[in-house]
Image (cartoon, rainbow, N blue to C red):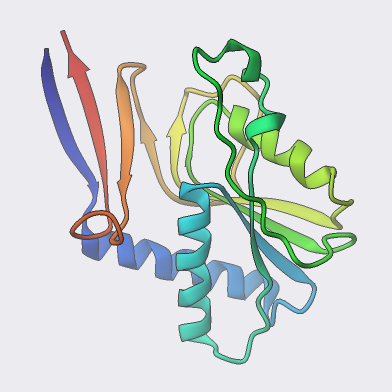
Length: 183
């Protein structure tokens, strides 16, 4: 088996992408008074926290409400797993009813995780508006009609490729790689 890797976002490109996405959110939501940010556990939660830190660096006066949601038991493939799923924690200590919700995940692939997150969020209340932010959109691989409002980078991938997001906490630096396994 041969592994091939291609760097999608270097550390500098990663930082620039986070900065751009943050400015796009500020442009659309200004002071975030009626807006909440929810990251999908686990990688989406890392991205949401990174975005929130950057938003506060840009404008320390904004009032951010940030939480994380676990979608384990909302997935449509929960009964098709070979081993029992271990849930993460949902941490939302604010109302989402009639709020603008920015849902954040690292990679948009088939759309199934996002669909599960929509179900999980709607179980907590009815947002005024719900938008999706993703770091990487794997174009042409959707199984459900889901589209992001804010995209860091769009990549066309093959089914034998995987997007790997390395976070500074558990790697040397924030980077994104496209890895392909060829047999």
